Amino acid sequence: MPLVRRKEGDTLIVLGPGVVNDLRHLLRELGGTRPYLVTGPHLADGPVGARVRGALGDGLVGTYSRSRPHVPEQTAQEVAQEARALRADALVGLGGGSPIGTAKAASFRLQELRGSSPGPACFVAAVPTTYAGSEVTPVFGTTDLERGRKSVIRSEPIRPRLALYDPELALDTPSDLSASTGVNALAHCVEGLYSREAGEAERAMALRAAGRILEYLPRSVKEPKNLLYRYRMFEGSMEAGLVLANAGMGVHHGLCHVLGGRTNAPHGVLNGIILPYAMRFNLPIAGRAYRELAPLLGVRVSDKGDTALGENVCEATAGFIRSLGLPGRLRDLGIPRADLPSMAEEALESKSVRANPRPVTARDALDILEAAW
Image 1 (cartoon, rainbow, N blue to C red):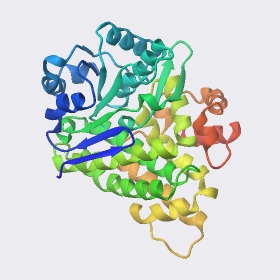
Image 2: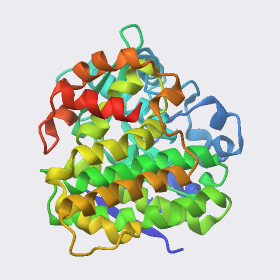
Image 3: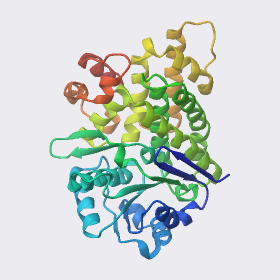
Image 4: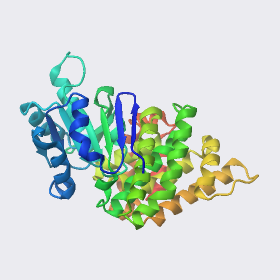
């Protein structure tokens, strides 16, 4: 497992077993001497949190351990206020998409407080333990809990300056969380392949990442303590995140954001439920994408037309997700069918839904949701 150190834009990416021990040095290299740790209660109280705090040493100015799924707006505000009071110059998000997204949202709030001053008030560093991909994107979402609405914002200054992948920190990540966030990473690849914003470099990266995820996600779910499998999954999820950052997303992610904001269901689990149905909706425009995905999913490419091949690819994707033991239906999450029409209408406000290469109507969105229910 070689040590990887690469730059993607302004993000320094470091991958390898034990690299968490270099965290303090890497932050200083980027100008951060007063880090503030943002994570959830489970990691904060366990060995992973202890190891990261130890790596940060006496430079650590504080810890916020109350991050929550879908990043409630109040949570982001609390982190921004505490970080500002402690004069933090780096927010270190530890865990999955929720704590890393919380750090990004707080950085955005701090930037707003600075007004016209250039650059972020407090840069973000990310130490992922799942495969959500937020650690390399300039995108974050916050949820208004009273309204049940999730808003997604893209802001280049909050793109993490450091993404540190240490597979040793992922060895205790529960298998169900690995499965759901791994499917989220796979969805980044699928939507990237037919995104109108994707160039040939993004398409090649999406296929490479999808191949790694399809091969190593089932292995890491079955053998969570296998360091090599965790390393390979970080390779795949990192590149899947870069695809998301560069190519954008479509109807699949837009629907998942609406569902998450309304119901608080885990984003990765929603990805697993919605993905095959969103892929079927995009069959008319995704012929090349599904033909390239087919061999990775074990689907034989024959002389059949794109529609028949695409149907097989969609079914193979659904079978892969089922094999991971994830919920298969929205009803399994307790989501009432009666709520689907209003969710479909709300989805039309999503930039991701509007960016889908096949235009989406409210009826289309409802059809996808009802098929997934």
